[in-house]
Image 1: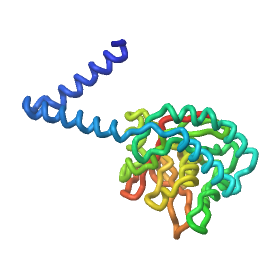
Image 2: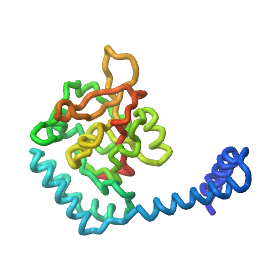
Image 3: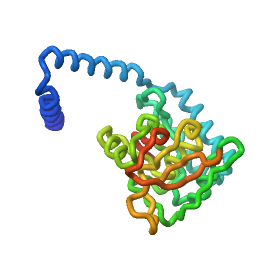
Image 4: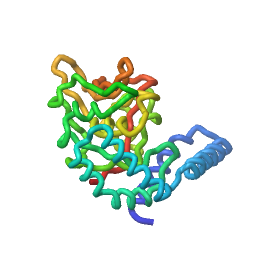
Length: 248
């Protein structure tokens, strides 16, 4: 056992001791067994994706970008990453409902107006009135077209504010998505038909509003809109999407 493993085990013992201090031996044994059972169920639900299915997903995403008017130069930059993306994803195990990967066009390549316009809901295109110069990312991401891996669309964190979700994701060793990544998620899935999404990895600076602001994508009269929200605001129809890793 390495030094890091010993430290983790020691921390776990301290936490368990604190939790079980007022419990009897029988309750402790039953609680530990139930936790093991739940972990076993989660592991069984996690699956490794078939390479053929991954390739099909990759090709469909590229086709979607073409249909949404993505410039050919950006299409090429994303397409040449195919072998690396498929190789990486084929070695990963995904929980049920997680998306293996999604291509992302960073704001260094397209304006936020162009990006949100690629989000469609039936015959309505996305839009925003936000000032692009007031948007900043809290997450370090590639400045050229790239891919995010093991994407969860925010359902797991519904009714949790962006501020609280940020802490939760950190403890899970996952990363909140930036605004460009959330837009990419909306381009390639129908997530907005189920719930709104906080772009917890980005912030918005609005001079006439006190408090820290995050960004969100939602449907306004059926059209996708990019707006802002307070980081401590929550509701049961919005969640923070996340990914496990990024690469370009």
